[in-house]
Length: 359
Image: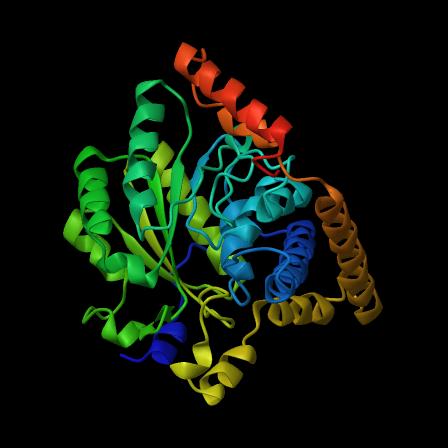
């Protein structure tokens, strides 16, 4: 089955979950904000102003649909492409750009890889570069939360490429055996860097893989906000009712490169990209709201401009924030600094004073 045939399969989502006009307009605003911030981040990297970035253009409906279907107390275990999920959770965009710049207001003080942000207060776990590691982590969080008596779920976000990883098998198998309250959210964006979905697996779908682990798999149109929202709401309800995990395959498309280190023109055609651009999730939701007289073209243009100005203001503030102080290298290493660490810091500060080391 081809990638495009996958995308055109009828979504198997519950229709009894309400998707109100207010929710649709909130979703559109978040999707536009994510798109604007995403475009600017790519430009900043190309200009050498930030170091690395993994874009999400084309996947906004999948991410916002999933994020809005959850509660703030639920745990999120992202990969490195979940900007829209972070914004939906309420994480300030300024905090994200501080991390992209690695400045003194970056919570990780520039010590984490760019675009690998985590926010404990928002239950947004720091991602890792290795593919699929967050899957087993999400299962562990889910089981720990249940052990503590918390009515929460955890969600693992990953792409189609991660379904070939060892962590996918071990994570789903463990979750199935112990009926963990976890949602496995696969954004099938058709490309695992340069490997197409049809060369990733012989399975008819990715969702069908859940059957081997003893729980449901659901394939939805990942460019349809309502379809994703309904599927995740149902999966969350199942998990909290003790019925175990669900694997959701949101069929979407990565319109940009895998990361700013990638050139997708080397492995995919412009014709394929053009066909998927016709299914742009933002245009789709916008047109739906226009058709239902819940939005006007003028209001949409105003929304875009407001978010452009917001993102520009945030970038200006993040860029004006100085880098971390050199001596911060010795902070957050030990809860109670050791004597040896204190000696190293003293020697380091002396070398700075002498000008041997430059900030």
